[in-house]
Image 1 (spheres, rainbow, N blue to C red):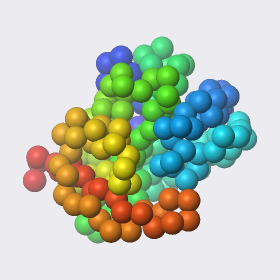
Image 2 (spheres, rainbow, N blue to C red; image 1 turned 180 degrees about the horizontal axis):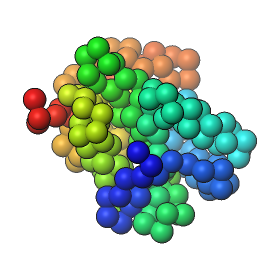
Image 3 (spheres, rainbow, N blue to C red; image 1 turned 180 degrees about the vertical axis):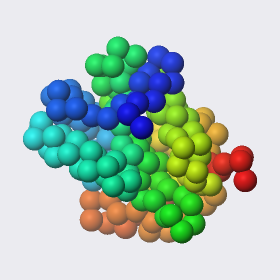
Image 4 (cartoon, rainbow, N blue to C red; image 1 turned 60 degrees about the horizontal axis):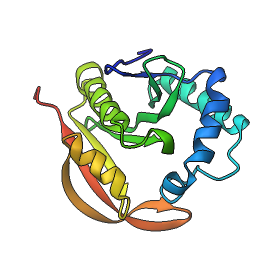
Length: 179
């Protein structure tokens, strides 16, 4: 799968040319990204982006993750990132994660990405369930999950690690209607 198009947005694999924009987007977004994503920090650099892109390419090649950049329909303007990962092949489900840079938030990018990735999970990868796990307190991400139609199942105790600390997390799900 090389790219997914939800209308005014495009999900596509990152390329080396995206590294400056990715690093800048992370730095720009630390107020909204930093508390919830272990990998984000105020000095995020292009070489870190390139390392992430290489990991994404390798994971896509071996089927262990499908990570994409969220771009405006010009294919160049980076809005954020989203992907499917943590596959449980025995039970047919995976995790779905997303983030949107500060300057592109509240414009529908994350909801569109969730919709596209859920379709990829169900229609192409033939999974029956997609989970969205969100740290307690991350109200913008919770709002995205709800707006995308995910069902809130529980608040799981100490479900995620954030900055070396176990925190409670909300578990949302999307399920295939094909079963």
